[in-house]
Length: 504
Image (cartoon, rainbow, N blue to C red; front, top):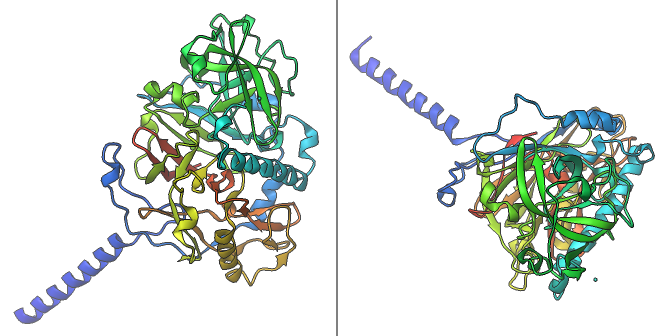
């Protein structure tokens, strides 16, 4: 071959190789999250990679319906789940607990009659939860915001009350294992205590302070008591009272106690010892507040955890477990990091900046102002593990819903169910093709949800609904159905929230 022809062939091969290399490095397909390079020190300087998303994905209808018939575990099986494995290890500041959805635990057979019964009960609780949040965050309600007149697996708590996800920790010395509801929107850690004038049913025996060598009541003059809003005093002991939006409440005395997370022992944690309790927490002994206030578990342990935690809510009906991790080491590399927004009027809540919504790979025409937190502390987007269904302001929701309906005209419609106005009759389908649903965050990251996080079965007969609802106010709430299966990390120290990259 002449030298000129050989040179031409060489040039062509080099150009082809360059084109292939550019294509492979410039595009990346994902159905969960856009990722950014993450370094705990230089998060603010990172840039989002260019990521392409598919316009459609497949919803496995048969599998989703099968999971609605999954029988929950008995309490003995659940306790076995939380036994400590001696081979488990904890490194640095990272401590891991199991999280379990309440659907997975059977505390009452009456609550598991059928999926439709479970669904409607859940929606009733959710409406009360959202109503309570809106009331707490509305103008002029700050006077009685919170108090009114290290890691574990997370278990779903859906059927037992407003508590959706459970962890199991030890309380006292020696430690008494108890199921606790996790709540990212609450600031008090509390447990039902003897003597109890009014207590709801829980699986484990009531905690008895007299059996704990480390239990120490808090005096009214204590600095800890001063941190509790509207604290009272009785016989020299600091009293607390917390009311929740769904009508639940806990009243009792404040104490310092030892908590055990797996093999990690944490002493002198301020907890509420509830002697009068009512609410939707049936099955659990109390609540583990993970909010941003000083009295939450995170606020109290900030020096030991680096003000950081990460969780993955297990998907409903599956045999997998979620997790809850404390510590700066829990912050994953490769997550999509977005700024954490603070609302001085509501320090307990974790706000994030949402810039828009997408359907089928296209951004829906919604003004970014619809999701903004204003100067009065109204509006904004709150992440809440205690709310099931994501809410958006009505104007944003309707545009979002209409875009989804436009791209699902090939699917047979069904009547509205409960709070859902957009439902489909998928009886007889093995799977269906649905448009992708995405959240666009300020700064570039995009979270594209799995199909079963936005089209969910509401009965066992094949009725699926678009799992979003309009907000009764300007407040948006990112609920736990949309969070399921996606690792979410809160780094309060650096004021960032991360999505992914792990799934559970």
